[in-house]
Amino acid sequence: MKDIIKEDRDSTTSHSEWGMYVLAVMSHGSKETLHGVKDSRGIEGDLTQEEVVNMLSARHFPAMAGKPKVLIFNACSGCE
Image (tube, rainbow, N blue to C red; front, side, top):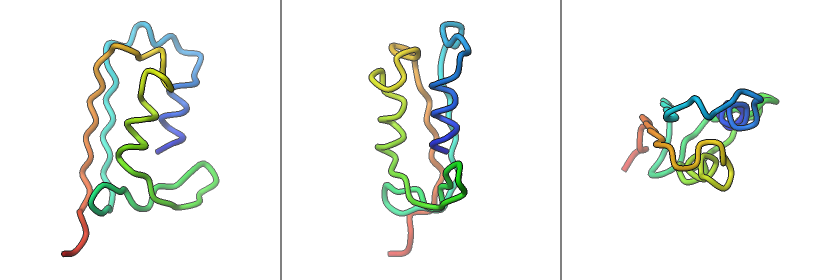
């Protein structure tokens, strides 16, 4: 997932035509963590929702600054 966001962020595509950014994530998880997120090397790890939001911030994704971002997280929240 990190790689997909980075690919969008770093692409040479002009994001000026994009009106918004939508990301839907379906995964296993716990309270605020997504489990089983693989990187480009196939290594699994965890990723917090906060990390995803930070990757899409104006600081890290300036081409989408000021544009709405819709983030949908569908992950189990673990056992209580």
